[in-house]
Amino acid sequence: METSIYKEVGENIRRIRKKLELTQDDLSQQLTLTRTAITHIEAGTQGITLLQLSQIATALNSSILELLPKSLLEQQTSVEQAISNTTLESKNKELLLDLVRG
Image (cartoon, rainbow, N blue to C red; front, side, top):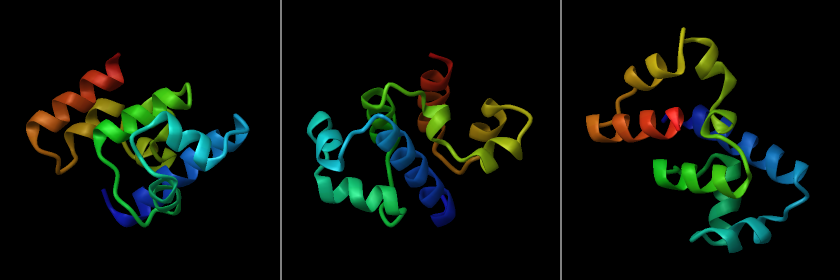
């Protein structure tokens, strides 16, 4: 993902976390990430794996789609097209498609 996409994902994570009245520490305790890692992810200064994105979505009672930038989704006619057009390896694309489809 591009840096700006990481930033938007991080902003979405922060927005949902705060809506749920969770601290970064609360969220990190539900995951295998440190509070510092959560801080960097929310700031968009640290990359995030598909597994981490899925785990964070689950911890926030959200879907991966809610964490993805709206700008990314608006540029595509469907989420599947957006995923297909990424530079991810084929196996990661399939994993993400499976996660999105539920």
